[in-house]
Image 1: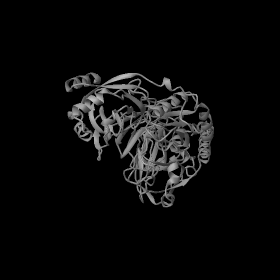
Image 2: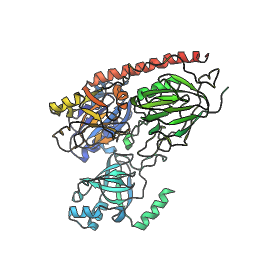
Image 3: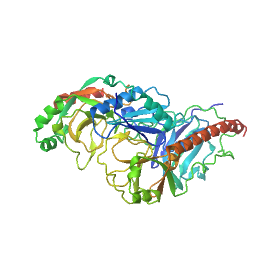
Image 4: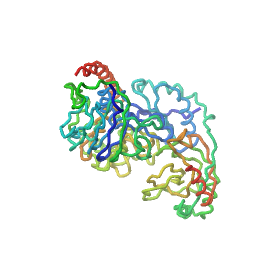
Length: 229
Length: 335
């Protein structure tokens, strides 16, 4: 059973947002994803965007009016199975610190832990992909050890390399593409999270679980070479 | 009677021209934005004018257009903003089909009205689809021409077209009929965008709402397909603290910490964490896409019901246009 009394808000005339709350709560995120699976086959929906505490549905206003879609969705709300949303469990190799994780020492300083402890705690967790957003294939991961919580950088970097793993507050995530970014970068993975020529193009989907496995720089370089082939 | 497949060669790149179609819906679940043309109304009319389906790939041309050399004769149509197109140095009217003979050159001059022109060619630009679309995603570097804008030396091929070739294919031909764009796309300033408000709109202090209603904002110079930045009196942020990232869409009016709003474009992120004041009605996306740096803009709140009725009327108009053009074309063949 889902949260009580979600809000249905129009996001313009061709999308609507179902808002379940205003806090980061794993149970709510699971519900948003499960509801998104439940409405998958509803005609006239073009896109589903689950997030921490909301589900955004993009639709064709020639098929649905806002009010009609809200009525249909309300009828589905109680009929959501939250047990089926778990995807695959993947291991993600990551090279922590050094040139691949330039903010590792700052995270250690902020949290009062040693850099090694930060690595042990970060790679010790089992993370859940709450949702994908920001850029193609970017996973918002839940499950960060609260002791590692570190605010964003005051000045975002103009270029964060692809594969960079970062921390922002209670969140951790991986940059699939080189881009500007303000998250604290603690390591990098040689895996390609997004490749438009691949089917499917994104390595991770909402609901997947991941474990970070520390690798050394040599292994990182070797895996990078293999990934490129 | 068919010649070689038409090809155009890019002699000068211009400022920022990209291959776009109606975008790639269905991928936002994986963080991949819809993209496609910013002004889907002008783009659809350009395609219909040259007998294409509405989703055929075309060039979206921004402010300063390219110089293009047609290696074979082809029908083309230019819609959207008026960027002073010329064929072999002669001014070219928009919103109608035009036969460009082999060897002719299309160039653009000063932007006169609007920001983006759409160049459709009969048969549509023929490029492989990536994730279901030929649209260029410049930030992620895929789609269109290797995910980048036009460059000097590029060659673009076009698909097959069933349109008749004029009796004298060596001379430009401009039929005397056209689509009246002004009713659907009045480009004269100031622009008044209709907005479906979000809860944060009602939370804004009166002074903030007044500013948004009164042309107090201008389009900033750092605007692009990702977002139009507004410059004007800073708005106070809603009080309800930190936001959780949630889905956003084309036309969503965000309020970042600096207090200067941003209207999200088609190359926006799929989710955002800033407060949202509302979203521009789909029917006004065409007008939004034609705003250029310095243009004044204001907003007018409307209901989602009204916005959807306007959108359906616009879609109906396009279907009627498609039907009437299909009756026109056989007669063009007799020219």
